[in-house]
Image (tube, rainbow, N blue to C red; front, side, top):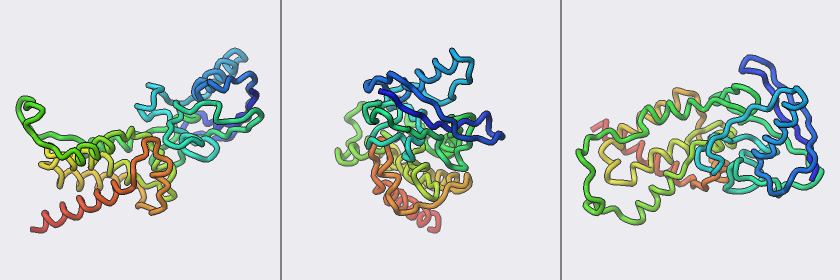
Length: 249
């Protein structure tokens, strides 16, 4: 099939960007979206042009680095699908596809579709880990964990930190990401030791970095490629309130 592309091009963080138009012929419906961009870049390089810069790594929907706006939606038109998992069969012959980077002050553009997600890493560094010395690894069945809690913790741990929740939110809120990282530990006995300090530190860092508050529109849940529920935010708020009450005692 033949498609038209309208892609955001920006030389660097200081430069003024703009949309540029491209045409591609003989695009296979079975191509992945990033394979289509590879195909475009091959043509641009052969013609002496500058290839489109974008980020990717695993191309298996695991690393979270490939996120971009596709026709106004983070990761494109398919639900629970990362950009790298998106196939060109989701589009029709003759379609014009608009591609741009996630728009958030906390995710500054590096070049073209490539953005800096360092803000997420700073939040994780603030408290998204377990540091308690537990000695050697205990026998797996020595700590009993409710299956409901174990399953929920696993669901939270599927967050890949792509930033779609921030990109979808009108307030650029990171609360879905932060709540997922807090709850994946808070739901398990191993993570409860540091739970009060963890939630206070991560929420404080999120606020310090300038992320907005929750907009309550559920846009983050709708666009999350892993389908993480906004119920995670409610649990994070309960964890935060509990941590504050403990501190006041």
